[in-house]
Image (cartoon, rainbow, N blue to C red):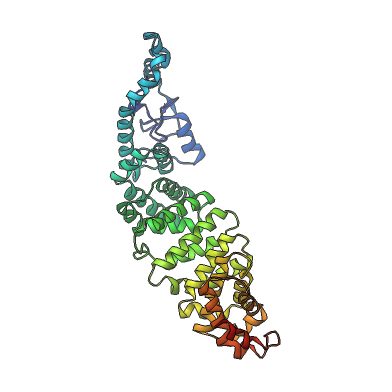
Length: 426
């Protein structure tokens, strides 16, 4: 039979776990020895964790009475005792566990609500958040209970407070609490509008962005999980109420992350979504250096999927004047795009042609047109005229060559008989 939940008095106020060696400090509060010794001697604190009152001394007095009571309680609920009372108990252990599950869930939900109520006041936020995450991991019902009990808002307030304390020069544990809070939020599906709305509140999103920029490797993944789920929720322009510049800067920094390809790949997906959804997304992205960063990534991209997404982003950015200007000013841009044509995939070739169309036809500059000749982009375009390509790509290629052949004819690599060939394509 499943053991009942231990009485609250049997739990250490620090770890919220059953006490193994209860000891009492000078304020009269009892803790598990290992937890309070870590607090006093490991963290160098001279206060009572529960009351925050100064300790008159550092004596730890064993609480023998409480230890005996806890021992008696454990003996009553031990499997051996239950087994001796009924010879058939072992064969019924599985059904008994199933019958106990609803009660266990009720008790677990009650403990979760209690933990949320105490979360902002407890000095042991990291431990409380770890325990909270352990209860919620893989348990959809517990996650729903967390959301309905105001868990997102409570955790968001803890994150905001921890970030403020960390920025003010507080101890490292404050930022650790912020990271642990993100780990809790990352467990949630964040698929409904209400949950997404709570997370998008500034007090929650600011810490999430801070974690993306300077959190530990694990914390950055948790923060990216949160942002990815919000992006996938399809909640319109989810960037409307937040600082888009901060989001874009964080994502661009992660694009070149050499430690975690998973992190950089997700950042690329979210960046695509931000640029697509946000009204000022493309111009803002260009302003914070997206074109330059994407061109550098494209030049080194080995993965087909990465190259295609980068080209798609460049195409979207080059639809705005600021994007085309940034592209023209970058000495590597044309070469990086030309490199993908007829080499990566058919989709990459189509996207590369669209990018070159935007910078050589919609708003041409002599520098871009010259770079297209010198980097082999024109030669690639001429090659496209002789292979099977989608009609729209072929048409853009033909028009690009016709419009710019007057400039390109001054270079010896441009074929003199091209005009006759183009006439045959009509």
